[in-house]
Structures are given as C-alpha cells and as structure tokens.
Image 1 (spheres, rainbow, N blue to C red):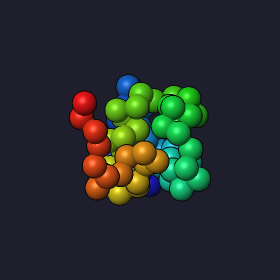
Image 2: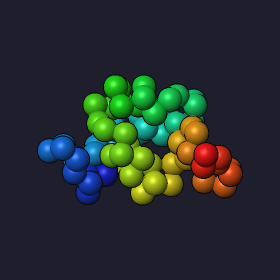
Image 3: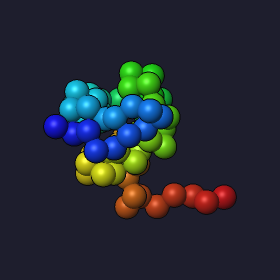
Image 4: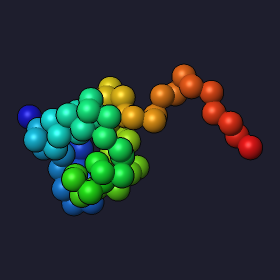
Length: 67
C-alpha cells in the first residue's frame, strides 16, 4: 500500500497512484490530472517522479526553447 506521501492533508492511496499511472499512460493532460486527483500540479509531478511515471509533455530529454 502506498501511503508514505502526504499532500495537503491527504495521503496518496494505491487507488490514486493507479489513476495517475492510467492517465499518464493514456496521455491525459496534467490539467485533467489535477481535476481528477484533486491535487496541485507540483504535487502530481513530484509523485509521478517518485514512482518513475513519465508525464505527457514532461520529457526531460527534449530540448526546450528558453526565449
């Protein structure tokens, strides 16, 4: 069971982790994830990183224009 990380007064549950995995694999936007999980973007990014879940649009190997 995955209850080691607490965010905004709520622990991440196994169900939350599975929903995050499913949405990331389906290419859902991080904005939609914030709505479905009820958590801020930074918290979702942090949890995804901890679980080694690649998020859509978060490919760190892609060069970005820094204008």
